[in-house]
Structures are given as structure tokens and as C-alpha cells.
Amino acid sequence: MARRVLQVIPAMLLVSVISFSLIFLAPGDPAVVLLTSPEGSPSQEAIEKFKVRMGMDQPVYIQYLNWLNRLIHGDLGYSYISNQPVADRIMRCFQATLKLSILSMIISLVISIPLGIIAAVRSNTIIDDFCRLGALIGVSIPNFWQAFIFIMIFSIYLDWLPVAGYGHGGDLMHMILPATVLGTSSAAMTTRLMRSSLLEAMNQDYIITARAKGLPERVVIGRHALRNALIPVVTMLALSFGFLLNGSVVIEWIFGWPGIGGLVVDSIYKRDYTMIQGSVLFIAAIFVTLNLIVDISYTYLDPRIRYDELD
Picture 1 (cartoon, one colour):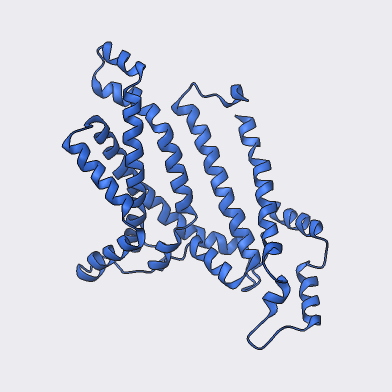
Picture 2 (cartoon, one colour):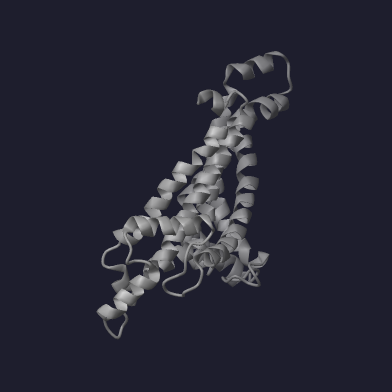
């Protein structure tokens, strides 16, 4: 397990190199792009001063090492556009996205796990058909269309919930609609996976043996089949949560939610390179951390998995 944790270091170093390279892969001289205004192009003297101030006059590897050194100390630099600390801006947006993601994931789990289990236990019945039809509809409906339908029903006609906005620090009333849209979409995919994974587990020899011993069906499913069936579901949930944490750009835009997805799009539009670098690195760190948590959770769900032995 320790080796699995240490594998995170080279992965993050590779991500840091890619993130840092973004500024050099973009077309044009970053200093010229950033200093160009509607009034005209900057002078050569202004460009040189800007490069010296931002450390762009030094060799690339020196710039990378300086950037990496600041990164280790938690300093992602300052925005080229707003001159605000990148880390502070990312954390403010991430807090908004985190609130939305947690509620979305709770909605997804409450819907998908029970429906997936019911569909598998009652397979090839009308209940199974109903669950599969609901999951198919959930997967097929685009998020933006579902968002507009929810707004029309619950905000405009019924006037129960606000159309958009962040409220007072992201209150529950403003979160319900966007979280429900994201949660039901994720639930549709997880329900299908939960059903197929549990059906596969219920056909294994150890389940037949458990039934032959006379164990009650709820014990066979709850204690033996469900535990193994959750392994692929956990992977799906972790990846889904990672995408939610990185902000569903369309949903955040529709509901005016100030999350990390909108920050990335806005930074790309304004060519705010330091903000893009920090955001990409932050998003990659989230996925690496979630994958590590998933790998560790495997050993709990299936004790036969031991990473140290595999290594």
C-alpha cells in the first residue's frame, strides 16, 4: 500500500510539467498576448519589463524549478488578469463546486444503489423493466434539457425554487435544482452498473454455496454478493465525483453557480495562463487522490486484493 501511495509523486510531477508547459504551447508570445489591449499592441520596452517582472526572461527549466518551488509551498502565483492569488480564487470556486458535488452525489446514491439492487433481485420482472427504463431515460436526456425542464416546472410554474444564483453563500434552496440535475444523471449510469454487477456476483459459485447452506436470501445478497458487486460501482462513483468536483460547466453556467468549471472556461477565454496552470494542476490532483482512495477501498471490499503482494 505504501508503494501505491508513493506512485502519486511521479504522477503529480508529470502533471506539473504538462501544466507548466501550457503557457509555452499556447500560440503567440504570452507577454504580447496579455499586454495587448483594444488601444493597440504594447511597446517592446513594456514587454521586456513584463517578462522581467514575471520571471519570463529566465531559461525555461529555471522558470519551471521556480514555479515548482512555489508550488511546493502552496503558492500558485498571481492571476495575470486580476492580479489575485491563484490558489485563493481556485479555493473559493472549489468550495462552491464542492457543496454542489456532495449534494449531487448524495442524491445519486439514494436513487441508484436501491434501484440497482431491486432491479437485480427482481430481474426479468416488471419492476426490473421499470428500473431499466428509468435508467435509460436518465442516461438519454441531456443535462441542459433536463435543467430547463426543472426550471420551468419548479421555478416558473410552481415558484418553489429560485431559477439561478448562489444565494447567501450557496444555500440549500439554490442548490436543489442544479444538484438534482447532476445527481439524477449520475444515478442513471450507476443504477445500470449496480444491477449488472450484482447479477454477475449472484451467479458466482460462492453464492450458490451460500444458498445451499440455507442462508436467508437477504444475508446471501447483503453480506456476500453486494460486497463484491460494489467494487466496479465504487470506481464509477469515484470518477463521477471527480467530474462533479471539477465542475459541470454547462450546469454551473445555466444556474449561475460560481464553481471551478466556470473559472476554467473564463480563464481560457481571457488567456489567464497562471490561472489555467493552477486549475489544471488542481483538477489533476483531485483525480489522482480519488483514484488512490478507490484503490485503498478495494482492499476493504475484497480482502483478496493486496497491492503490496502484487508489487
